[in-house]
Image (tube, rainbow, N blue to C red):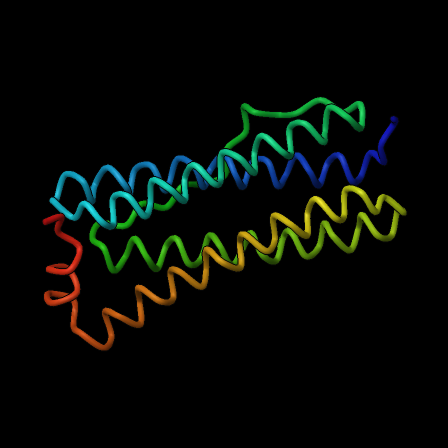
Length: 156
């Protein structure tokens, strides 16, 4: 099925966001593992895997629409030097993703591609859950202080 060129372009932009997020989360995950924060390592690693699944879904949809997935483009990756900065950088990335998915959902509706819109709405729901999880961790740091929070992230 031949897809709308503007929508395929938007899907490729979302794909670049997802591929960039995978790298950012993997680096943050491995940094936390290196620091001994096994629970944060696992949290970030799971999120990277979810972003990989989003990339896979986007690639499949671009191909279905007879487009060419662009997997060689990454957006700037922002690595936090400590846990607080990691969460700030990840929050900013998720905010950007949510805005981009909302715009692509509007575009899919405008070009009457409601199947793509439904796929994007499902991914948007995951991104909402991601930002909620980040905000939960940030709230815990605010309530406990960073040193106490980090003691809860060490595997037992």
